[in-house]
Length: 100
Image 1 (spheres, helix red, strand yellow):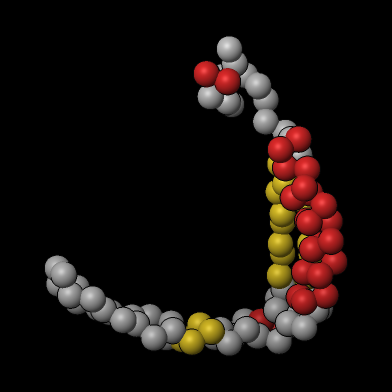
Image 2 (cartoon, rainbow, N blue to C red):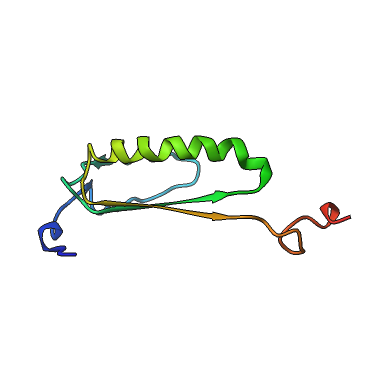
């Protein structure tokens, strides 16, 4: 991937902030975010496929397309990945009281 057009782009301002902090005194730092056009973006979603998450799986299936469509408003240079796992019913992967 050619990253040269992206070099020198400032997406978050200010780039550096020096703050002197004192106990019990709040400090606010205003931050501005301007995404660069067509900036590369990688998103990876990890889904628990155990039975308790079955209804959430259906939601993720429909949201995947919606997320991809929304991202295209910001960049066409993106990759969207999905992964899955199922918890093992063995210590230390689950609470010991669940094993009995």
